[in-house]
Amino acid sequence: AYTRLGRATAQANQFEDALAYLQTAQALSVRQGDPRGLAEARRSLAAVYISQGQLDEAASAAQEALDLADGVGDSILRAEARLTMANLQQAQGHADQAKNSYEMAISMLESADAPQHLADAFAAKEELERNGADTRVLSAIEVQELAQPYIRRRAVRHLAKGRVVIFAAGTGNP
Image (tube, rainbow, N blue to C red; front, side, top):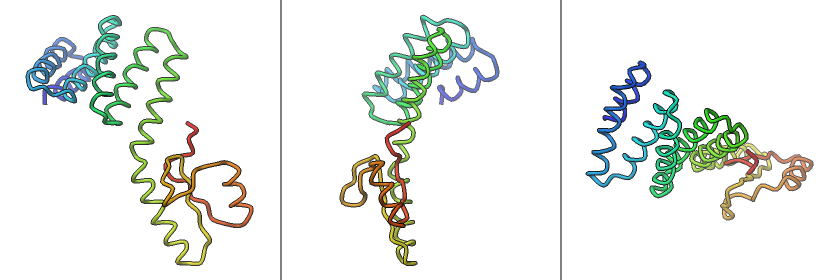
């Protein structure tokens, strides 16, 4: 709750209050042994530091948020931490690093949705085949029992044979 309050306060440009709320969230997360809460608090602190031009503090907070998010294993949390790092890199004038970080975050977010994308693809395949369409599902994520791996030549070959091709969970090309 303190992290959300800190973010809302920061959006209202009340940065001193935002820092106080986020530091409280950080302390509570440490006390409770909550790495997810700590990652969210550190990421939010980094964002406030960036907006205030305190880039050294932002770098420390953003890196810790990334490390904690990796330890938690939540791809959404990792992507959010990576986005904060990209914002920091951009503020530091490191455009190429920022671009790479943005692309990594997008890839993480896409893979977080992968199970739903796969489920939707298989539902569409089933419906298309029920209506007589020869259908293949290709995926960048290996699910060999259910979908063929995405290989560009294979996709083109299926299309040339008049098959419907459903791309599920990406092609591995951000």
